[in-house]
Length: 329
Image (cartoon, rainbow, N blue to C red; front, side, top):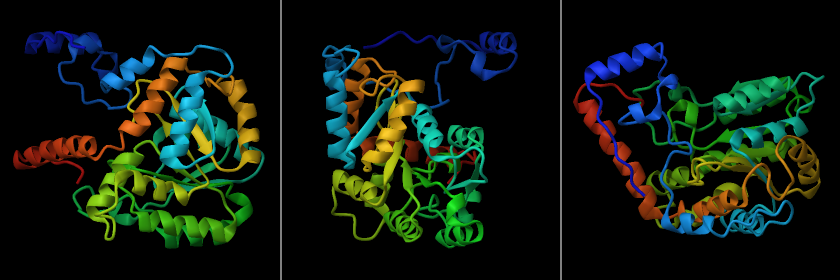
């Protein structure tokens, strides 16, 4: 599907900016020739995803598209229990509402919280704690895995505050607030081991899990010959569950989910899902959107797609540096 784009003149852009009060979020989308605000929910869908929309089952309960989504999550990530949500922040809301006790002093460590994650933690009365490695705060430093959590800081923090004050530990892959920096499998494994040692649930913010897997394949020793699906399955094998915005590596325009292994926790989260999102087999989504997300989860694991996506960003970054324009490296 195509649409005409119109290049505005400088005078038109000046007028539009003035009318918007110089707030770029108030510009009409048709006035923006190249939109670099976000890739969240804005990407084109594949022909396979468009075809899937015609198979939308809009039944209130038991939609076939939910079963397709659940099967895709099981196949790609390995989790048995899935609750769809309208997008990623919906997943955060029902998970934190379940696990965080508002009347107690509690902390949630993360490598670096995304803004909605941080806001949900605070809204529930807990304190978000960023424990990303120090090099992540240097925008020009280069390191293959700047998104890694500092595991020494994590263990020290747990010992300092006490296990009873930490309802869960999260790890965001890739580390969005740090510039989309990847997290190594060695780090994911180490964080998981610490959480198991202290009996703390470990959840992954999985918005860009496939891109993270691609970086692991390219940069981490021992994974060059592994396929993207193999790396993805290993990533999630170390976690108790995940929150997901399908608008990123689900390649969808809307949708998300929370997934987990433990049935008892699933039943508890499900209660809040019904209240805030919808019945457990639609979770605030049309059936057709669940179908799109199910297909996108499989498609995003194609290495040729990931190479094309990441290489074009590398190309743009290199050209910007050549022109003397700084970027987060």
